[in-house]
Each structure stands twice: as C-alpha cells, then as structure tokens.
Length: 206
Image (tube, rainbow, N blue to C red; front, side, top):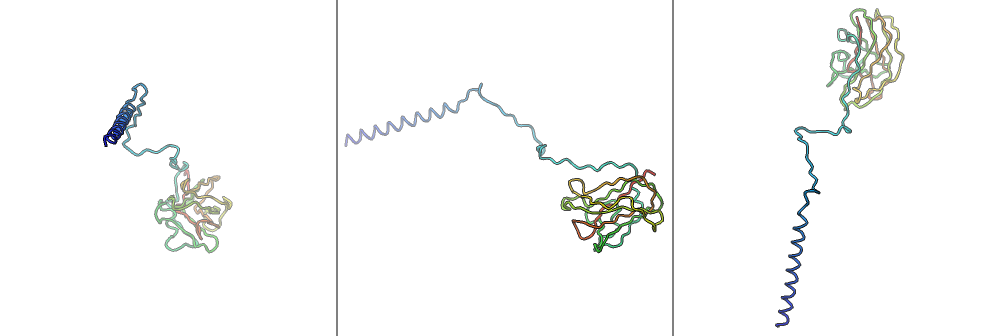
C-alpha cells in the first residue's frame, strides 16, 4: 500500500509540474514586444461606404441644345395597347406607367403635332429607366411634315438599343429641318409586341 501511495504522489507531482509549466508558457506568449506591435486604426465611418471598383457611375443624359418643343404638342398614334395611350409619350414623365405602347399589329406609328412649324434638329426617345425594364432593341425611323399629309423620312430605319444602364434612352441628331409634325415608325421591338415610348422629345433652337 505504501508503495502504491508513493507512486500516486509521484504521478500527481508530475501532473502539477506540467500544468505549472504550461500556464507559465501561455502567460509569456501573451506578452508582446511593443516594438513588434502593429496598430491598425479603423476610419470613422458614419455612413455606409462602397468600394469604388463595385460602384456603377450614375448615368447622365447627353446634353441637347434647344428646347423640347414636344411638350407643347399633341401626340397621336395609329393604335395602342390597353391603357398605354399616346398622350403619355410627351407628358414629361418617364416613370411608373406613363408610356405609350403600340398595338403591335404591323408598323406602330406615333406622331406629335407641334402646333406650328419649328426648325428641329434632334429627337430623343426613351422608355422607363427602371432596371425592371430590361434592355431591348427597337427598329425605327423618323419622318417629318409641315402639313400633316406629306411626310419625308429624315432618319432611315435602324435598330436602336434601349438599355437601363444608359438611361433606357437614345438620342438621334439630324440635319436641321422644318417640321410641325414629327413621326416615329417602329417596326420591331424585342421587349414587347408593340413599340414602346415613355418619352418622345423633339428639340429646336427656335
């Protein structure tokens, strides 16, 4: 029995000594040399910040000289879908449900009567800028008339891309021409059955 007691005491002594060494070692490892200490200071951040590499720059429309005289005119069309009548195409509002959509039964035509003859030089067309309105391509041409009867094509039919990353708009300059009636004819739209315009802008320097 005495022999077993001695062995037990020896084992306990070894365990205690081992624990003491481990504690001392851990304590010494937590003490750091101030010379080797790197201090990191976080910036004072009161607002959410974004990495510039992941920030998409805000789109700005190209500047067009003159006045958008379409706002003074009256819009009409050869057809429309549901409640999306041509009156929404020149109301100055691109958002919500303010847009014209053609019937899609052949070529869709929308015309703005400017009420008098202007010297016009640029047309800007847009659909709703919200990203829910995904990118689409519309094939269209532009014609003008002074009397509302005889029209002359001034911009030949071409495919234009409307992309929410670029404001969902296209700006189409052309040589200055006299016109009271300006017509856009849309023959194809990859985003809907009929042509679509939230705004039909016509610029003049008069």
